[in-house]
Image (cartoon, rainbow, N blue to C red):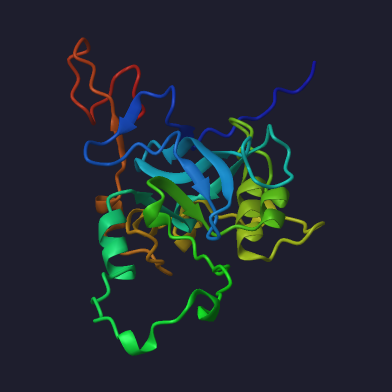
Length: 243
């Protein structure tokens, strides 16, 4: 008899679970995902979170619409702390700061030029992508090579080797053929890494290299769904919730 394949469900997908995004936080599923150059990577397919701590750990990205030569059916995981959220609310402020209205200069008739004397200018080619002008978008600093090398996501198969591989790819330490050992995976310490700082994600791209001591209290982004028919309040145990 074949051995039963081991499942790793310490992290679960938000979709189809008995959890939902807490009030006041945006549900980014379906939002487009781009890199820092503004190239489309795909869209947010789902979020993987820890039901015990109620903290989001990974963004699941569907690469179907990526502007790269990548397997169109591939989905990959990006640690939450390596992504930045832009929800469109910064558009006006960003434009006012970056493109202030210039003062109107009086016309100097002594320097009026004929049509033939007007100098020509080359069109600007140094366009800088500003995600704040892009509406609802998640930005991740990732290259085409990294997307190719990231392991394809498989539900219930996120084992220690896969999580370590993801970390090494984003850190640039996992070259092709790099061997990952499960012995270097410590469950109680793995998510203390800055890759999983939700503050980075929800602060408009301000990177943090360490986790704040009170992160557990401040970064609960999902909560158990309260069903009117069960009589259970959120945070209490019932047959459908793992809280």
